[in-house]
Image (cartoon, rainbow, N blue to C red; front, side):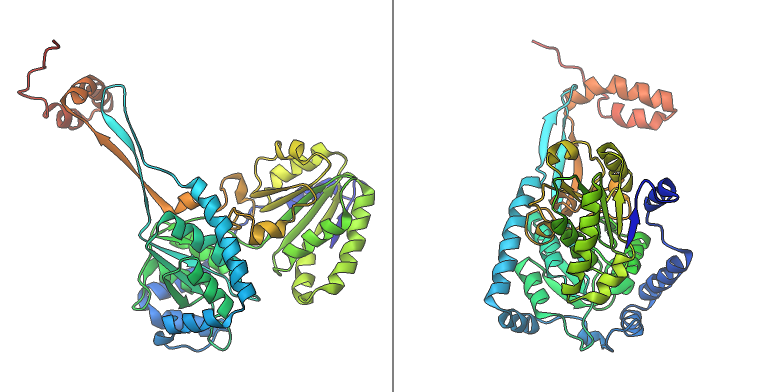
Length: 435
């Protein structure tokens, strides 16, 4: 863990160095390109090869699909408390998503033509659910629920199996509760490639969603264009802005919670109170001893930085430049700070708003931009499962009113066939006189 104070040598340089854009290395790009190309050309054989090569079980093509019988058995094996938690989270996410659904609309333009937008659900989407060091049951809720709410008929989930070849039963239960229609034992860049290009077992999708490690994110980047992707969410990030009224124990708990995700996770505290900084440092040392994931925490805490800033203005400026996935505002007047933050993935206002509530239950999806992408991208929303189509319909009167303008543009751009394609529809028709 790093500590930065204004008196620290190279303070400003080190603070500036924390700002980053997530850029893959040439080695990573080349490795993923090879995987994507092999899956595109060899299908299931490559998918199975890379699954085993990168530490997964040795599977046959017939093992990839998780059967309804397996799903039912998994569903029946989980506790009532687990199902209750999944359903409570799904209910909140669904209610939030319904508010964000886009609706088709139509109007008449100035020349009298009918124009508008139509919004339809994608017909087949792929959702990546990380397995890794823990089954991310909540990610199934935060992605599949949105797809189902949007009305997507085919929701294809891929997730890496455990060493025994099985998917965690709670994850299978969450996927089915939240709308997944197909589930496959596949992870890593090879699973993304399979969703994009298709294999004998996995039919291709229109758009790919979901977080993952650096290989998964790079694979999404490389298949973009062949399919759509939602965003490129990588390792977890949390940035806390705190004043002297904050609770150091709560801040430490938030920083450690996101650090549990392990390697690559980033936790940053910005505070204008030396007392709070010292309190958080001590609280982290105490709380880390309580963790059941000490290895993951040890890796992530190397990226953690506690920063003493000279003013709240400096904290706000840094937060906007850093563009964190999660921003916790632990100040006396969080609303004042929130209004000045314009690049955050998600805001958690006030000391009693833990980031974990957003991870599991609150309502907005927890799939959020990382690596500085929040400057340009929002988090996952239900309308990203809807496909937009523009609509235009002319009658004779509206086309006649539009023709002079069309002809002017066609002349300016030297495109006489453009003008003719409109004028030809009115040839031989006399303009109706107004009564």
